Length: 132
Image 1 (cartoon, rainbow, N blue to C red):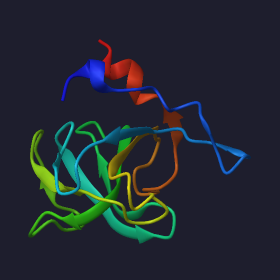
Image 2 (spheres, helix red, strand yellow):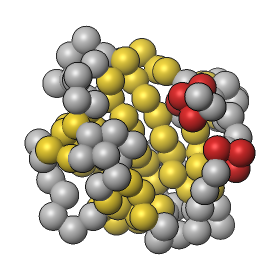
Image 3 (cartoon, rainbow, N blue to C red):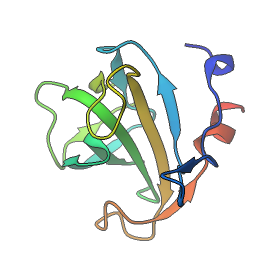
């Protein structure tokens, strides 16, 4: 995948009332999802909207990275585990509220003062980081 394949969906409305605040990265079902940076798995979580999700911190523990709509986690992945950049986290899927005909990775970044609050933070548009 090339940066030119990405589309900035961060500011799009979802459900008519909320901002997306993430990138949807289209990919075939089963495509490996790898850690964008090293850090630590904060929480493996299954939600109605995001399906199977990995919440991970960056090494500074100032940012939370969210990888959502996975069909499966990587074997052996666990809460609290140290991860390295490029490590498999799972595979692209359509869990949660994702359309079954549009497999994709829901990728979000949150700026956080306390990563123990693994789902809370100030959203950061990841698209600008890919464009650098």
